[in-house]
Image (tube, rainbow, N blue to C red; front, top):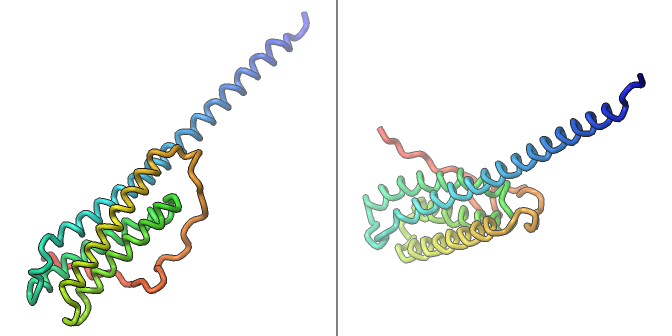
Length: 179
C-alpha cells in the first residue's frame, strides 16, 4: 500500500487555509479595536471641550473673586482638554488632528486670559470662548466625517511630531486644590 500523499496534501492545505483565515480575522479584529480606540479618544476630547465651554454661561459676571474661582475651574478643565487631545493628535486623521490642535490651543488661550493681568477684558474672554466653540464644532464635524468614512478610504499621514503649536503654551495648568 502506498503512502496517501493526496490525503496529507489535502489536510495540510486545509490546515494552512484555516490558520490563514484565523490570522486574517485577528488582523481585522486589531483594526476594529484601533478604530474604536481612536473614536473613544475623540469622544473624550469632545467631552472635555464641552466641560470647558459649559463653564462660561455668563462670562460678563467674571470680576474680582469670581474671576479667580473661575480661573481655577478653567485651569482644571483646560488640563483635561490638554490630556484628552494628546492621543487624538497622535492617532487621528489629518483633519481630526488639525481640529484637535486648534481646540487645544483655544483652550490654552482661555487659560492664558485668566492668568493675564486685569487689562484683559471680558469681551476678550467672550471672543476666546466663541473661538473655542467654533474649534469644538470643527472637531465634532471632523470626527463625524472620520466615523462615516471607511478606514480604507481615509488619507493617512505620519503622526504629529510637535507637542506644542508655534506660539502655544507648554505649561500645564495647576490642578485646583480640592481639599
